[in-house]
Length: 94
Image (cartoon, rainbow, N blue to C red; front, side, top):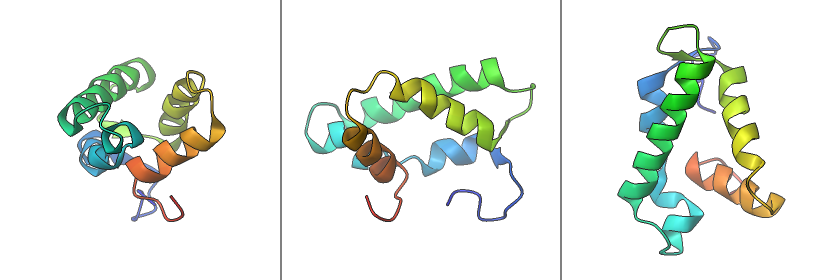
């Protein structure tokens, strides 16, 4: 759980900090470097944030889910998508 305070909003910088690029399946498989993956996530998430936010550096649960809804449309396997989420966010069960 990212929102440990339970306030419903996360600082954008906190979201970028908590992303575990080194655990991403493509990094673990040697397809991409950890730096590449971290940079890619930060750039795409910031772009999504600029489009979806109301001009604040806070991320809502809806915005976070919308980002991954768009990403999932480009992933063929539900199992891979679940692995990606579990590993990249250090979720139990991944």
